[in-house]
Image (tube, rainbow, N blue to C red; front, top):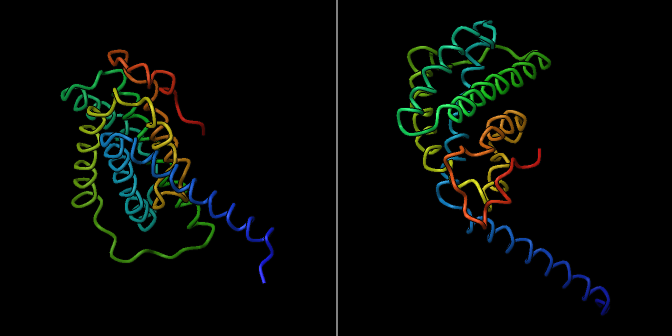
Length: 203
């Protein structure tokens, strides 16, 4: 037989869980679609780096290619500016995506090295398959960045701070990628409800 105290405790726990779930739903419901789309685009590009890392692991290539990264930064920044993202902001965010990509690759390669992992089978070719896919993902990310860069107040910080489950094991790379979104461009004018929240989420 359940005592009155135990029953009350169980009810309190159930109520707490219900309120927590409702709070999570409220955050999700209040997050603008543009922020959700931006988060998805950042994640989609980062996830492609797993196959890049597998290719480099198999071929014993270094993660860092400084000359390629420098050229990519300039080219991608120009692409962002061409669709309406302010240059300084574009350069900062693009540089962060490149750094996050490198960090994710290094993290998983270090893990494989510690595990003495063997070669991976059926890894897509880096030049003919992976890089075109990364270019498409980057273009999508830039378009969503343009649409969301002035919507980073309110619930955006909490929505973007937590990596999706698929990137939970490389949370540092995620933090690098999203941390550069703040502060928004000077050309943005956040409404009063979001002004106090347009700071980088805690890391």
